[in-house]
Image (cartoon, rainbow, N blue to C red; front, side, top):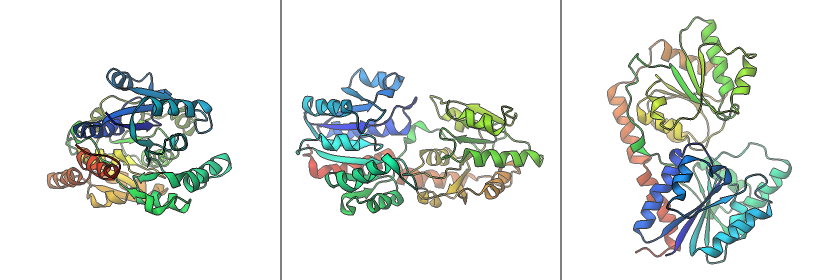
Length: 365
C-alpha cells in the first residue's frame, strides 16, 4: 500500500488540534486506499499521545537541536524513504523542510506546511538558512500556508508563488463543548495561553491587569503557560506575583479551561492561524484579540473584539468591558458564530482542501 509521510517538528505535551487534524486526514486517506506514516521530533517520544500512536502506527523520530544541519536527520529521513512506499512527504513546522526535500526520491511529491509566523527580521545563520530554504530548496516543493500574509512573506523570500497556496486551519469541533459565558460562577475572569511570553503578548496583558488592579477592579486571570513562562512572570512582579494572577500548566481537556472563564484574551504580536481564538469563540466565550496579520478571518466573528497590536490602553479598555459586564453575548450571537465556524473551520472542510492539493499526485480508489 502506498503511503503519505507526515513529518512534524512537534512534541507538545498534549496533541491538540494539530494531531486531531492529522488523524482526521489519515482517516480520509485510509478510505482512499493510502496508509499514513509519521515522523516526529524526538521530544514527542515520551508524550502519552505519541506512545498511543506508536501502538498501531509506524512512527519515526528525528533530532531537534541543529536538525537542519545534523547528518543524523538526513540519515533517518533517508531510511524512512527506503523502508516505505511513499508517494507524498508532508513537512510541518519548517524544521525538517530542507532534509525532507533533499533526501526525497524524484517520484515523491514534497509539501511544506507553514504553521508558525516568520520573524520580522531574520539574520545570521538563521537568515542564511531561511533564504536557502525558501529561495532555493523551495523550487522542489509546494507550500501550504495557514495565513495569506505569511504566504506572501515567503514568496518575497524567493519561494515560487505558483507553488504556494493558503489553507486556513480547522479545529476539532467535537472536542469543544459550549459554555455559558454570561454565568457568574466562573473561576476566572480572563484566560490566556502564554507559552511564548513575548510573542503571545503576555507582558501587555500583565500591564493591563496591573492597571485594572490599581484602579480598584476585582478580577483574576489564568495564565496557561509552561516552565519557560514563569521566570518572565516572576521577573515582572519581582518574585511577588499578586493574587489576581494565577499560573497554570497544560491540561488534557481544554474544556476545563474554557468552561471556567468569562472571556479569552489573545494578545499576540505575531500569529498565523490561532486555534485558540477559533476554539474559544466556538465555545461561546467573548474573545479579546490583537489585530494582527493571520487573524483576518476572525473579523467575521462578532464575538471577537480587537485592539491595536501592542497597545495596552486599548487592551485595558476591552478588559474593562468584561469586568463591568457591559459586554455580554446573546444566545443568537453564539449560535451565529458556531454556524460560521462549523461551515468554514471544521476538520472535514480542512481535510477536503488538503486532499484536493494531494490529488494530482495520487490515484484515488
